[in-house]
Length: 370
Image 1: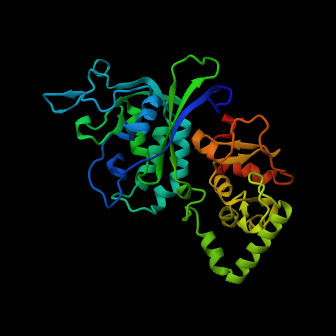
Image 2: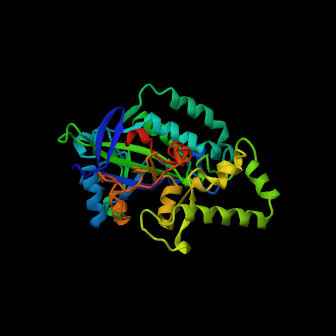
Image 3: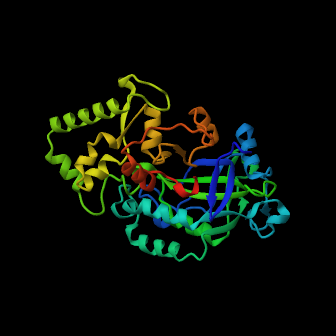
């Protein structure tokens, strides 16, 4: 148990005993106001969470502690599923042990603000009109932990599609469907037990995440101005190339190997910005954009982990792993998020940049993990 990753929520520590990390929010689930232009319909309130047959089905049943997926809990007269007697039919999966957090919903809306306003995807409606009302609704929620129940809304087992769905009748379920944007949003569910009560029934922490490239601080379009594009347009191609080559050479000279793989072959190293280049340029901080102290030498996989905020480092150089990836993925990456003697970098004079990375790039709240 001590090898499990921990997370702190509202001051209470939990072990993460399992997780579902990467279920995309499909257009069929999205509230009708947010639908992409190429799709029609109103959207359905049930969310796909996997298949309930074979090894994957066993894993899904174990995750939710529920094995009755796809049974016909039908109202024979109305010819539809009914959840009026969910406890009796077995359709109830978890009663008031699932929750969203107000903090996560607020972060999602901050991340999605630029997409709400610039709309790089094509929507039926001008979703900008909904943003402020939705933000106000989230800000006015009276609790940070918003509990709800979930039910089995899976396909009829006789159809042999074996697609597992969940739904809820609680108001928070309706709200998160209204907030999320299709195609670029993901559902993450952490299965938790309290550190101080390991025999307790598990809780299910539902989170919504935005695809990295659509997060407001890295979005291709800017709400405030077009400084990035202006800078790019006024520089010569040669000037860009010379600056980038000088930056890369100085980063690798200062940090000649990837701390994860120990690779020293310069052909396989990326000079990864700590504070993103685009942000430095948008803020007219070109000196920071080409400062070798604003860089780490990483091999490609670990560059992506750092660049997209799945990992970060403390000011003393200690690795911090977020909670966005499964334990299986961490294992395959040869990273132990719970190691007592964690891998380190030498962060001398990088503290300012690392602070920015932890605050704005890292996808978790650093205070919940260390």
